[in-house]
Length: 255
Ligand code: IPE
Ligand code: IPE
Ligand code: MG
Image 1 (cartoon, helix red, strand yellow):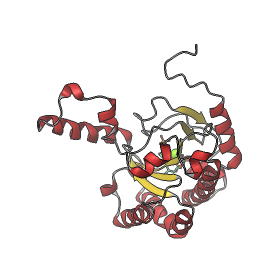
Image 2 (cartoon, protein in one colour):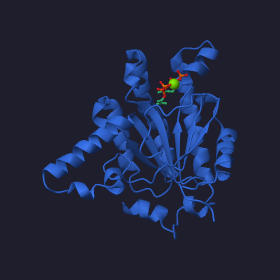
Image 3 (spheres, helix red, strand yellow):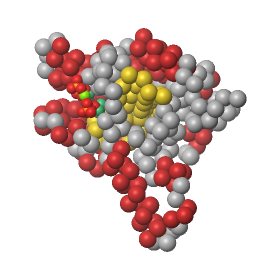
Image 4 (cartoon, helix red, strand yellow):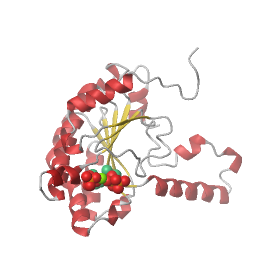
């Protein structure tokens, strides 16, 4: 585990995040969904919904950081979103540049560390450059991790991990009997991160849409009807309050 993360998760953690109550999720994941429906309800183009989604992202980052969440992972573009009309895909893949252009300085000032999970090589160059720059500039920050899932798909992630592990088996570096959860986890994009504690999906859809299928094995799930552009502090608080009341047994029993 990299040093910044060891610091973040050690019992003696010194970061702002760790000093807060332990009843907020350490790792919160959000499927930012419902932008198109938000726009349609207002007779606006879908792109207006995506633009409003950026505003919701900005305030959610602020609130999550204030609440002491250590890692915020946001699903911004899936491997299946390439099926959308090209103008919408192009628009969506310009948003990371746009967002980082306006917000990177502030994120950096707040000691936020930007990360990305997903197939970087499949993204247009301008998206890759913007994300790489943000990752580089904030690499040494020790506050909240802001992790963008971009061109991310869980099945392809698992396929890539299987290929890498079987190559190591073929090369004689790994014995099949050694393959365990830890080896698989360490070959996923999320290798450096603990599994999410809480997943939020707005917009009323009750599905995972190929998001973190391995990592969500014991994550608490919370769904809301509100569309992502309307997602505000009260919804985040509601989700966290529900999370606090969950009894996480991980298959065991309370004695
Ligand atoms: C989420 O909103 C944004 C992305 C998937 C990139 P949608 O665009 O999926 O909005 P709906 O689901 O059509 O309302
Ligand atoms: C999931 O939302 C992907 C993102 C939010 C980035 P979708 O809108 O693409 O998912 P489906 O099509 O409703 O399953
Ligand atoms: Mg959607």
